[in-house]
Image (cartoon, rainbow, N blue to C red; front, side, top):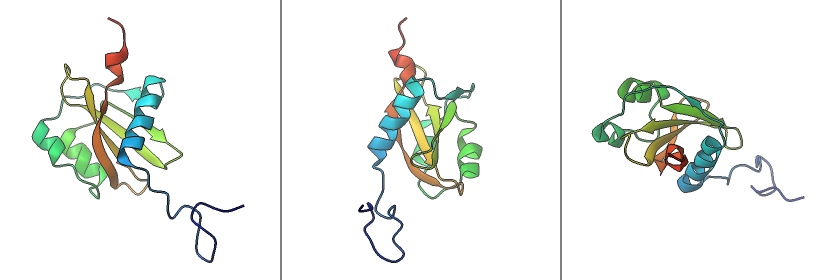
Length: 120
């Protein structure tokens, strides 16, 4: 059986797996819509604060800048925790951040807000 990372010494089979941010956000949206998220009340972060969040920052720096996320959930297949922030309550977009186990940010980007799918 061939592993995805190829054969050979030091190749774990996972070296070449790098999820695209869009795929990560789609997975996050699906899991959130399926009820796999925890929710908390949090103030809406400002656009300037969202723009300052970059890969490599720490989770502590993120939370100190934006406050607690609106909700978060694990994606065990990718070994990350997704933190979701609603920037504007009337907008159907959320800002999602994937955090590695070491506490650093891997990806950031917008995603569809599952709350917009609910009937009125």
